[in-house]
Amino acid sequence: MTQKPLYIDNLQYTNISPAHFDEMAVAGLSAVHVTICYHENFRQTVENMITWNRWVEAHPDRLMLGRTGDDVRQAHATGKTAIFYGFQNCAPIEDDIGLIEIVHQLGARFMQLSYNNQSLLATGCYEDEDPGITRFGKQAIAEMNRVGLVIDMSHSAHRSTLEAIDISSRPISITHANPSWWHPARRNKPDEVIAALTKAGGMLGFSVYPHHLAGGSDCTLDSFCEMIAEAAERYGARHLGIGTDLCQDQPDSVVEWMRNGRWSRSTDFGEGSADNPGFPRQPDWFSSIRDFPNIVTGLQKVGFSQDEIAGIMGKNWLRFYDQNFGPVGPS
Image (cartoon, rainbow, N blue to C red; front, side, top):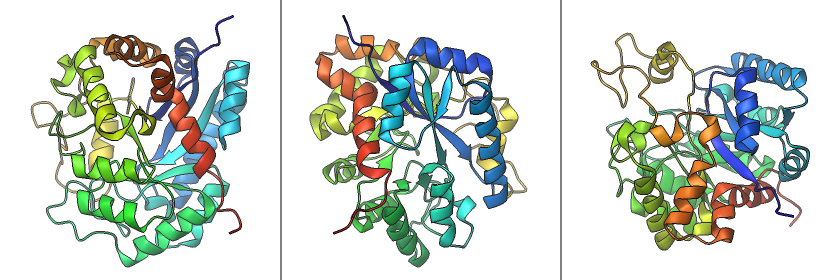
């Protein structure tokens, strides 16, 4: 009997609905890391967690809350999707280091140190200058390491990312980005950063968001998977996974909030433009959650082994969860 594959999408921000939960089941997703917040403060973030808690409670046949790698295994065994919470900014901890432990206790497992802009912890990738990790940032990294809240540098600038890798005593992540040697988007990462990340045991999740793809919305599955094959040659397949950054069915007002939050009176178009301010069209081979298994076909075509494909599609993230979601053990 063929064993059902274990798939993990380590970053989504879809407009949640029961229809999407059905699509997760069709795609065979055993775990999804969902975005809880961008610019929200602590109280607003807790409200978003409550909303997700209620969705999980209302759909026990489809969903369960994820806290550990074993929750992924349980979801996989029972045909459910484990939902893991993550923050795309450090705004929820405000200026209080004590909130790091609290948000982990509430279920958060990933937190970005910055989202495009300068934060209290690190520099975002849209800033002109990158002075690196701040004093607060160094303290926050140590506390995140202690409790098991994974550092995510997807939207951070390069110096800040390299410093976070060096400062952290545990592996960190870039949950949703692609190599800039494939497509030189501002949000994609240079070879130096990915090499340092993976050498330190960290994980890179490949994004299917069109602004991160060579060819944009017209990117082909072949091109995407050839990029993954090149990345495996450079950095090792065991450090690679998928973080689609899928924003399925979100209205364009959401991308405006993501880019502008409360910090700007003028409109910032981010990776878009005044002519194309909204969400870009997804490539044909990944138009919705149910298309997740299409990546397997592309990876097979470029020559990955079954074990390598199983790793990239989920088991590499699962190993990372096992090693990094809990508190530091006794020395």
